[in-house]
Image (cartoon, rainbow, N blue to C red; front, side, top):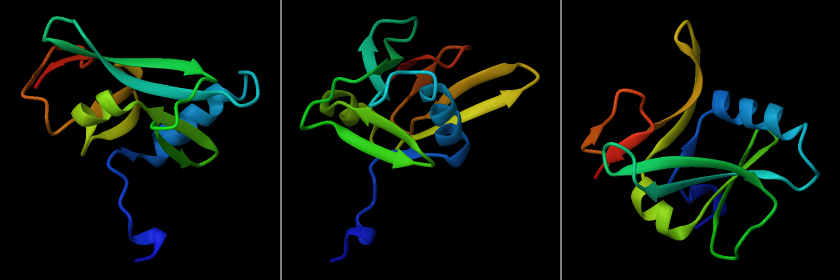
Length: 114
């Protein structure tokens, strides 16, 4: 089986990748966006976004359009099958995670339940 046949467990859209790459241009070389899940928030869990240079060997690494996004294994269990997108409309600009495991979410979209 070729490497191209291996599907990534989390999708990073082109719009999100372009925005991440824009953000990382002003960060130190070797920086990337870490996306994660923490307990808390009004619905039980909340998405986290941090720029860092620290990476673990078991992190999922997604590279697209000059952007690098990493996800730790615990967060990946909850994010599997998700799509990370970037929305830029009249309501504002933000990263949006479409998570099929989420059974409920708050109005702002950053807190969810599984």
